Structures are given as C-alpha cells and as structure tokens.
Length: 296
Image (cartoon, rainbow, N blue to C red; front, side, top):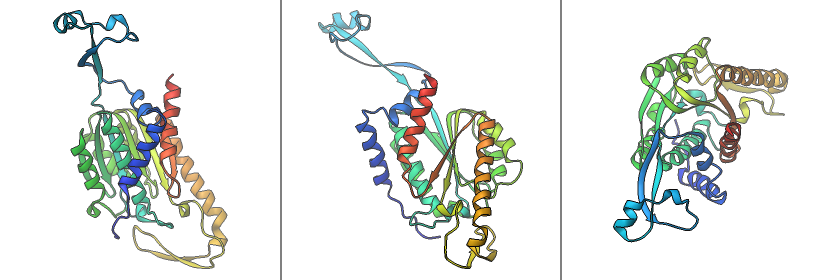
C-alpha cells in the first residue's frame, strides 16, 4: 500500500477558521449544543458586570474580596464520541488524487480535533476482516496524537470487510456513549449485519453513518473502451466495456445507497453521503446545524 497523502493541518485549520468566522456557531458550537453534560461544575470567580443577573452574585466571595463577585460555572462535558472506520481494501481505491481512506483520515482527524477541543472524549475502532485496532475513549491533546497515529498506520489497512463480525465484536467491547460515527463505503456487506448494528447503535444517544464514495463507486467512465478491472478483496480480474453497463451500474449503486440509508433510518440513525472530490467541512457543519434545529 502506498504512503498516505494527507494534510491534517490544512483540513483542521480550514474547519477551525470556518468555525470562528461563524462566531463559533457552525461546527463546534452546534455539535456542543447537541449534548448536555452530566452536570455543572465551578470554574472561577470574576467581578460583577451590570449585564450580569444579580442572582449570580456570590455574597461570601464578595465579602472576602471587597468587590462584588459572581460565580462562573461550566458544563461538565466528558462525553464519549466513538468513530468506527472501515479500513478494508475497497477503501484504498481512488480515481482521483485522494484515496477514500485518505479522505477518511482527514475527516476523522478533523472531527476528533474539534470534539477534543470542547472537552469530550474520543474513541476509535478500525475494522476490516475484524477489529484491527481499538482506541479507548479519552480526552486531551495526547488522545489526538494516539488517534492520528493509529489512522496513519498502514498495518491496520487492507483486507475484505466483514462488517457483521466487526460490529459483533464492538457490541461486547463498547459500553455506552453519546455519539457513534460509522465511516465506510459500505461495499461488500454480507447479509445479517444489521442485527449487530441494531445492538451497537442502541448503546449511543446519536448514531451517524457516513458513506464515503469515489466518483467511480456510482458512475463508470465514458468513452474509454474496454478496461480491465480487479476486485480489491480477492484479486479477481474482469474485462468490461463501461459503455455497455453504465446504466445498470449506476442503478445498482443507487440501490445500494438506498439500502444502507433504509437500515440506518430503521434504527433511527442519521446518514450522510460524502464524495471524495468535495470537502467534508460544509456537509458536516450542515449536519450538526440541521440536527440542532430539529431539537429546538
């Protein structure tokens, strides 16, 4: 497998800059407002301002300091957000400069950075034939390096996707959490995986499925004549003429998309489809903003 061509700093900066331009109300703000922490904890005292509610005044602290002081509290976060990332061979495909797995690495790293910034915990599972890597949820800058180090390790990539086996393993490994994000191209799914998905999704308050697709996942090239294609999972080769099967191919791809969407919808989970030729920043911001509006 070739070395990953990713630019984590660029993607994280792009997301962070966009967030600040929107006065912290687009990505991190909308994400943070979706979930309430388990409680409120004391942060610090500060001087009273005329715009403050008088009920915020702490009279004992005011007597000690000689100034009118208010108590500042913050919401306790420490919420668990868990990523399940498909690292099978079909994710190593790319008809453009960006492979699907490279796109996913930048996506997960950027989201993890933002989630850790608001004080929540991030966990990670990398799956293909089974569970290849498990990172327990934790918070802080160190966790960001642990997650990105795993994402960039080629040892955890390649192989056929066994979604059912991987999800079955995770149902006994993961306890509970606030947000579960499953990222895959959802190709080569074996029958019966949805029953394990049902069990796993019940452990989380919110579940989001993200289908990452290369343009060739839903449309064949035009005017190229006969081409040789290879199954990335078993190496089998076949000669095809794209012009003869373009319509059937597009229909099959659309049916697969609707099938996966239906299963996520059946278990009251969210679903988002991303194209590797487009930035994930705006779609993710729209997702969190839309979900926030539904809760109002």
